[in-house]
Image (cartoon, rainbow, N blue to C red):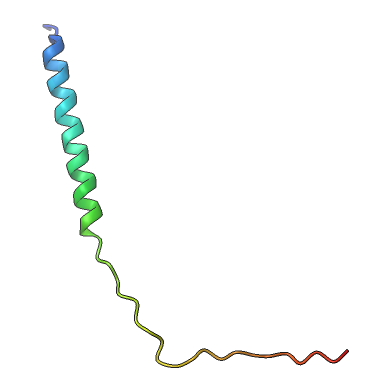
Amino acid sequence: MPQMSPLFWLNLFLLFMLSLMLFLTINYFMNQKKKKHPPLHNPLTFTKSWKW
């Protein structure tokens, strides 16, 4: 089996790095950002009256 020259290793490395960067970029931008809607009603708050 012939050995690869250093230039081919560099090309292979660049190919893998480019594909990784492309994959990460696509995954980042494919995420749908959910809009935060304001609550329809106020949440109930319970107050405790402390008797000392």
